[in-house]
Image (cartoon, rainbow, N blue to C red; front, side, top):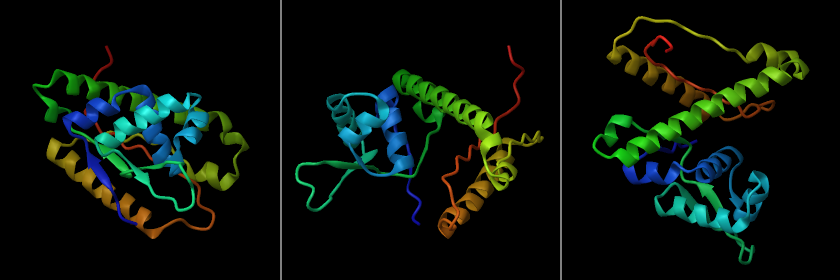
Length: 187
């Protein structure tokens, strides 16, 4: 499977830093192509707003319209990528893009907490093999910035190897978060 990654530029990050757009792109990435009507139903919003925000995402290349023969006027949309990344420092001197990067990172972190909490609540009802396979770990390492970059690159290679292998017969969609950062004492 081809990995499609986007490194957000200033325009893209400003467009994506909107609650509905963020959710739309996430839904398309996780669940695959959908119409504005289906997305609106799934996200509890209206079709007009959904259509508008999908066009905004398309204008900056984050979603694409997908041709579906025989579907009449239905417009299908799909994510243009599998993975999003950005470097906050790339937006130095652009306060709006920097604020957008901060908002996206906060939203991403809240999503991580929501996913982890949802799993924690239901894990007792899951089959033993899934309870054993799911894991939470924390590693405290002493690394330089170069070493952390190398570690992230190595882990990305491992993840890509599993993505390229394709799903096994008993596969489920997995959320795998990776967030290496220097230790900071909470204030």
